[in-house]
Image 1: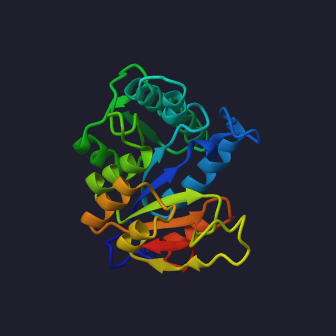
Image 2: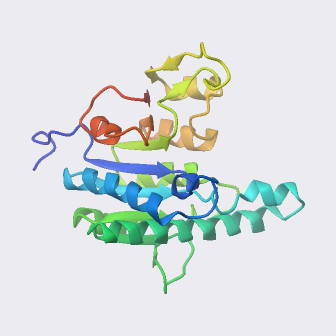
Length: 241
């Protein structure tokens, strides 16, 4: 099916998940049932003909900044976080394969016994063959967040959009949990997101998306059916473009 014939607005996406998305009620650790529920959503998107890449954080297991705050070397703390993202990637891979979705984990930090090394052309071949590709290990470098890794991998694979999966239905001018009158944006530019210091992604990730004309869609991943609605072009969440 060619792009003009596709019923979908987006034909290749990079899904950015937080590590907490895999966690149970405590917000920590890995809950296999939660991973399975996420996998079912990803499977639905993949069956619609969309190529899917995934970057997942590690906040449920480790945060580099937490280590730095107690005196740990920042680079060491960040490398520990990158290793934790691979653990999450393997958990999500297992859940996807339980859902009969062929999946590959690629890591920016080589660990050949558990994941393929990240090679851009190999990742593209996997996507072309209909496999879901989970990118672990961040960018492979300290001082960069998994948001930046998502923007980088999305650019490299030619994704149509970065979908930032959150627990909030878009981007607000201030915290809607604290301010009931907070305003939700439907559309906003990358530059506005940067200048207003909105909590979309970190500034490095937004700048990379802006420089490469890559839109960011922020939505509530846990709202039933919302991801497929976004794929088909319905007006959900906040589009940063």
